[in-house]
Length: 393
Image (cartoon, rainbow, N blue to C red):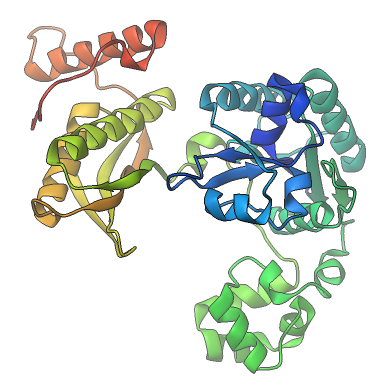
């Protein structure tokens, strides 16, 4: 029996939330992101703004040059998270098999539901439109690969200048035919360099890839060639994984408005990022064994370094200590940084360590302290209390 997989994408999510907050933005070219005076980047932009060539990840200063009347709206992350949680709750009410990909995107496996998947998609879209007042588009197919590409195609066909709010369905057995006319770049695993190599071999569409013998693709691209052969025929057997199993890492990073060389400011930033990563791990009841550090210099040279801990952790102080040790190995006094980031991978479930019932230890005290900090911050806000100094534990 064919699976029934939905891919949901909230259309211009940040913009849609900002329009709920300020209805006067509707129909106007605006972008959500950082200031154009600094190094602000477009996180999301309205569809009227896209007519001027504005798009996500574009420097905000460039976006304003392309669209002089562009309204710039600063981020309101708390609102976005709140609406995202409401959307994900609606998905889980439909099926327990929900795989969030980001704050505004998810897969849903509805194979166990008796209704036609197109009807399920329409009902879900109507619920999100009417109850949450958010536009969303869906792709419907027998697997994740085709459902995602179907949604991208449906959204890309929008010419109204408003939110697509599209539903694109690929019936069972039509996967390869649907993919065939699309450009190779539409296929997962085909970046600019791979697309160039494929074009040099005469392959410009997904159908061209599908017609090539798998053995020949493997000869040119190795294992990746075999993957391309299967994907080009619309074959994808990956299950929809729940959030707990789907998360591979948790990370946070910040791009400074101006290059920063002050050690104390870099330390405070690194500690704040570590606290954010730890908070997300605890919320997801995860802990990880590998701490990663990301540094970007003013010339855009970027390095990542990682270290494996003796035991998994979800504690802010341990994440920070490991990241700081990596930082000290790479950073020299006076060196300016453009970006700094912290992440934890090697994730597993298990949540908090069990407290020692008979003998209090320093570790137990630190855990109780962490619990208290979390409770205070949840009740009164993140800035209500913070650690001072560099605490290398």
